[in-house]
Structure formats: structure tokens, C-alpha cells
Amino acid sequence: MGSPWKPSTFFGEVAKARIKEIVAELELGSAVEVVVAVHPRSGNYRETEYLLGCVFAMMWLAFFLYYPDPFDFTFLPLEMMGAFAAGALVVRAVAPVKRCLTPRAVMAREVDRAAKAAFYDLSIARTRARTGVLVFVSVLEGSARVVKDVGVPRIEGLSTLAPRLDQAVRRGDIRSFTGLLGSLAATWTKALPKRADDINELPDAPIQAGR
Image 1: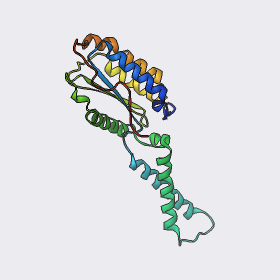
Image 2: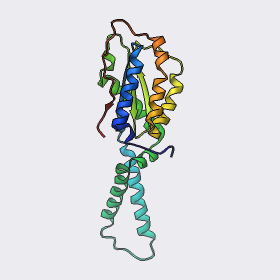
Image 3: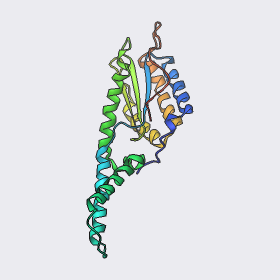
């Protein structure tokens, strides 16, 4: 099941202030433009809801067929529909259940898709020197993605940083999350130093999608 799921941590005022502070630090000596976007989820995972709904319906049917005392068949179709709805609602209402029952590969694919969409939806590709970087946080999936524009050079360690960011998101650990982002400051300053005419083109405060 992984680490405890803490959905509210990344949506609090403390998290917002700390992320804004670390983004300002990242941009202090570098031309990079960092945006942190926090989303409650990247996909709706309806198939997981339907799966548990089917399991509940089959369990009810098995109980109906094998219980020693006879039951009236009149309302069996409606009862099975009710069992299906109950199972689907459990997954929809209890996010940790949805996270546990959805295959990791499916969630990873949805996070990748949502991060790339957010990169363009938030106009991160429109900076003058194409130096925008999106740090996309998807809370339900416990995942983070770093999407950079063409003007940001490849840096060593970014690939190894990704799983550590994921761990911080899963734990709801803002301190570790911002600390990991802050560790990129010196590297980005060296790889992409701040220009004399540099201006702040993108917001430092995190963009928090509706919960």
C-alpha cells in the first residue's frame, strides 16, 4: 500500500508559503522560471470504481445463491444494481481505496498526461527564453513530475530526484519536498545563470487546482 496518504498537506497555507519561498530561491540566481502546480488527482479512474462495483455485485449474488435459507428472486436485479453502486461509491468516496486498487502503471500514465497538459495550459512554454519548468504534483497518485522547456539544459541528478519527490508527496512531507527542490538551486544557477535583463515571468506561488 505504500506510505500513508495525506491529501490536505499540499493544499494548506503553510505549504503554499513554503513552496513560494523555495521557488523564489530557485530563481534568485538562475534564469529558470519554476511553477509548482498541485492537483488533487490526474485521472478519475472510473474503471476502478466499476471493478469494485462488480466485485460487490458478485459477492451479493454468491451470498444469495449459497445462503442455506431461500430468498425471493423478485428484486434480485435491483439488489445487484444496489451492490454494484455501493462498491463504486466506496472507491469514489474513499480516495486511498482508489489509489490502492488502481494499477501503478495506469496512475503513472495519467500523471504523465496531466503534467504535459498542465505545462501548456499554464503557459509555461511562453517565457521569452523558453526557460520554464513545471513541477507537477498529483496528490492522489502520490507522484510528482518535472517538465522543462527547451531552453532549460539537462542536468545531472534530475532523474534520481523524481522518485524522492514521489516519496515526499506520498508522505505529505512539505519540508522534504521543498528541500529536494531547493537542492537544484546551485545546479540551475551554474547551468542557466540569471541575466541582467531577467524578469519574473511566471508566478512563484503554487497553483492549486480545485479539490
